[in-house]
Every structure is written in C-alpha cells, then in structure tokens.
Image (cartoon, rainbow, N blue to C red; front, side, top):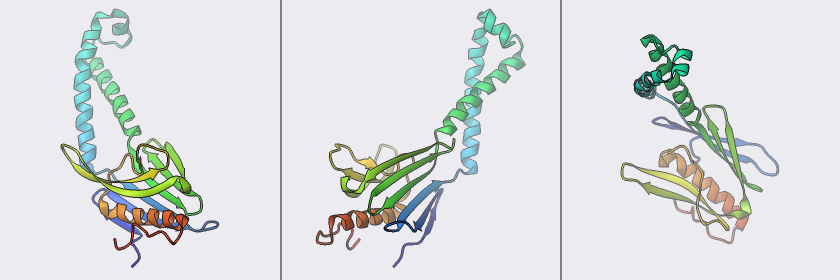
Length: 201
C-alpha cells in the first residue's frame, strides 16, 4: 500500500514529492511547521516582558548624560518607546532563527541531501554520499520534560549520529515513510543479497 503523499498532524505537515531525475527518480520528503494564534499571543507576551525588562535599564542609563540626551530619555514616553524598540529587535532575531521547513532529498544513485529553511529565508544544505551512509535509524529521545522521535543517519567514520531534522520534532507517523525510503535507497546501493532492516515494519 502506498504512503499518503500528505500527512497533517497538529502543527506539522508532511509532503512526499517524487521528481523525475537522472538516472532515477528523486525522492523528496518535506516537513513544515505552521504557527498558530497561540504562538503569536505568546510571542506578544514575551515582547511585553522584554520591554518591561528594558524599561529599568533605560531608566538607569539616565546617569550617562550623552546617551541620555541622544535617546531623549528624560521623557517617560521615550523610555517606553526605546524599550519596545529593543524588545522588537530581540524578537526579530529570535524569529529569524526559527525553522520553517526541513527536507530530506534522496538521490538514489548519489546520496541524501538534508535541507533546512529558516523563517528569515536562509537555507542550509548538507549532502551525504550514499556510500558513506551505513544505516538510517529511528530513535526515541527522552528528556526530563518531553519525549519525541528523531530520524538519524549512521555515517561511516563518524562518532555521532547525523540528525535528519535538527530544528523540528515531527511525530513518528511522518518519520516512518522517510525512514523506509532511506532504508530502501541504502539497501539498493548495498545490493539485493543483504536483508533489509525495513522488512515487516
């Protein structure tokens, strides 16, 4: 039975896209995250707290007369204004580092490309040759406050696992189709005589 091309669960959306390539089809798996109204409200709350924290800092800067005069901090309205400006700049930096989408692009004859797209528009690519990938694994990660699944690659000559998704924590239902596709690509490269770890899963 074929996997569903699109899976939506909570804030995460998984899209499976197969593109025609040479010599084989390119298997593309995207996972994106959408921001909710709750996220926006919590961000506004965070901005207000930052502005409140900046207020006493600007009030203390009144002792430095040159900065005091430059920013017109003799007026309470100016202190409030500059507090919100600083809070806004900090929030902007936080938002720029948030991950919008992560992709696993499988090129069966060549390797796997991991792609991360940030909300700032920055895109980071990492390519791993297929002959360096020993195995793909699903790990259950447990922390004191949460539990989540991660998809990793075991790389020849590396001591640490390579995470496929570094900024997102998608549910297991979205990771399984990607894991199976990675297993199939790795097993095809190794040869059909080697039993697959993905059988009967």
